[in-house]
Image (cartoon, rainbow, N blue to C red):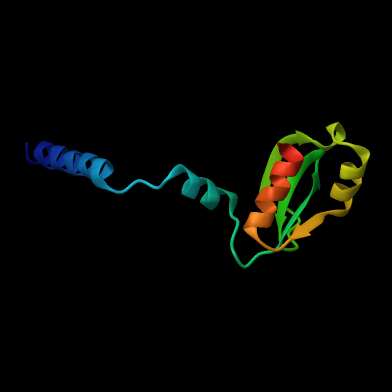
Length: 101
């Protein structure tokens, strides 16, 4: 009986916490999931035929987009083959919009 009461109280406490804890905005969650940080440099380049974002000199992308590089004009494909490096998240966002928008 005591275990049941304790379990019910614990479950009730968890439900209350879920209801009243502040929720993160969607844009903040997206920013956290993409792992973009202010101190990094970003490179947009091809990864397995798709457009991808790389942080600093990483070999693994932090984000891969559904945009096929083969669908882009030749000049864009050449730029992505070499990689396009930017310094800020704002520059990165504009570059992403230009290539995937």
